[in-house]
Length: 77
Image (cartoon, rainbow, N blue to C red):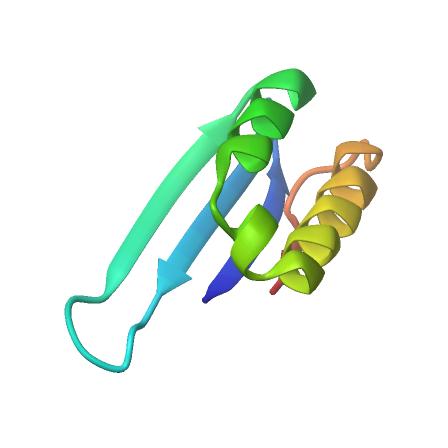
């Protein structure tokens, strides 16, 4: 699983991609206009328990991007 985060005008853009060994590749694209909405989504994501290190890195990267005022700043994860 991997994430791509980008600070955009009006919020945070997130791509969540899961490529299992077998089965269907899943890619979600989301836009959050408020930090609280992103945090609720992140807390509900199963990676919180399945991949705790990835979850913590997602949290750190998102916090850094929310604090950036300029647009078009990206962090691949």
